[in-house]
Length: 272
Image (cartoon, rainbow, N blue to C red; front, side):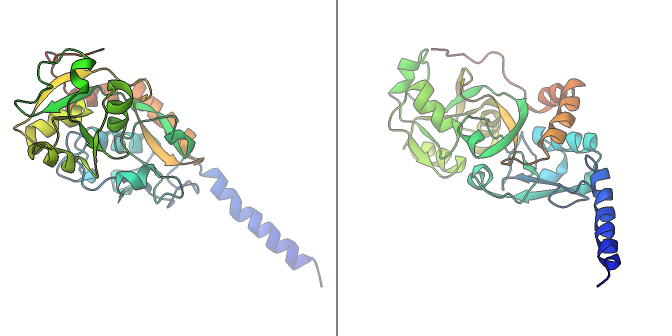
């Protein structure tokens, strides 16, 4: 048998690979989940001020707007951004992912970084205490005065870890989602919960308007802030991080924070 056909096939295969190598860091990057589109994971439903009208594709809300700024920096048109819905637990779980990366207020922690890969931090929120009128946490000025309250939090979140490991609360009730936490509060089963300040602002305005923000708590040293989440070892991280650095450097993230994540400077702060 002549080697000429074999060599021709091998040469053809090599040539077919070279265009793929030439289009890395472009919308046709072969490392993408689907070359030609940016596939982004988030939860369903999504909530303001992170995303508006339960529509991540709206471009409205802090995280939705950030993704479209990031996509533009990476060379994608808005219509090339495709959203994939998963639960929070699915997003943070180890294993294969159906997206290039996810954005869902996922806090970067050492434990999570053992099974998924994160981008640099794009936002670090304060924690807020949410309670109904008459709650024993109202008027508290120290961790000690907060610890004896009946607390609730969503399973798998840093809010739960914060209550147990930073605040020192015991017997925290755990719920499948934040809606369940608020329903428990309304039913008188818990006295209070904690959430990222932007989430708390929306919750007390829309989801549970009879409640209010009682106090602000300092950031958890084990929670370095929110990052984009990738499947562990995803080779896209360096490209996405470089684009995110550009978005941050030109002040776009600060502008988005000022637009969507406005805090009340008069809220009381409890630090110890």
